[in-house]
Length: 491
Ligand SMILES: [Zn+2]
Image (cartoon, rainbow, N blue to C red):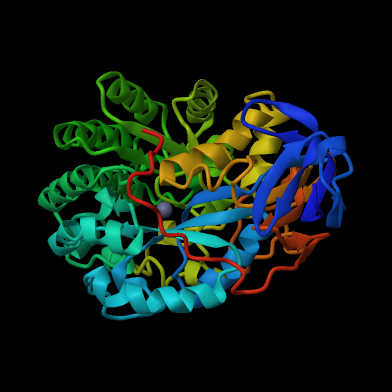
């Protein structure tokens, strides 16, 4: 065999089927060979993995760039992703946020035809890893255009913010001020838009899929009023404000609509045992449904409080009962995907400005970043904690996420022909999550905790984007990833 561009060897290679000693060869950005060291070709550059784990580049299906200037966020946070071993990010974006910043005062949703084409070229100049989009669907026009978005832009996953569909009127009633405006849906939308979207997704076919944020906010409002009366503003109160049945109720209702329309469903950030129960029931009822959860809902207990106000995310951080159910779901394959819900709020965006009612202490602080800690957190608490195997973890962060997004087998696997996205991970050396380890300037989950399983080298299509503690990738090395109609997805 002739000389190739890059070989990673002397590692413990983690594949979907098992772990073996050896490495990976990459040429012209693609994996050409995976095997024991003696079977790998000679290369221009050889990386000694030093018995560390060699895994496929991870995929974070759930990120929210656009809290500051959209392109600033994409540049910063995609480079941060590389530090976390992530080589592909799924960005959830609203038409009103493409290219404009958090402070935009007129977030009127428009057709993606108006904003996407110009944005895409600019995007390719700033990306530090690869990126695909999940478009938020908040108007009938956008729902009708789903087939066009899929065919012309390669966008095949669509997010429905069910929790905020009431718009600002409902947000204000719930004590959230104009929170829906912050999400780019000031007037909200109704079940008609959801129905139309689901129907168009089903008609367009794989890998099109509907993502839902399941949380019945009008019911949350009732619990919120109680907590306000008690003057509570701790993390446990934030949890109590959104009881598990609010998540389960939405999964139950919209699974039914998914069944009626034949639309595949992807439940983002599943956080409760009750919600998981509805996912399993829907699956048994023939609904094509897949669930995602994330480290903060698997690990952090709201009764312990830290990270305190910085942990006030939606759905809330729960408790040990939920953790147990979600680990069980992950182990049993009922929860197939892991994502971060990475929200790069700067500390000053977490006070006052964000949640509008200045007298409501409870809302101070919301949103946090997790791309850098997703793998170490789950490795530490899940794999070293005896909850799941390393192969199960890698499947949930790589192969399954690629399949759910319609990117498999180009992404998410160490197989010949796949993109040369590889992570070398050190399972032994502990590092504390603090200012010195976290590259994002935003608030981070797991602050103060010591984690293992940190990436030492991240390779994107054969190029080193993170190595030896340094970000070595440059903005522009990442690509926008269009998806191809006809590619199967996970469901
Ligand atoms: Zn989210």
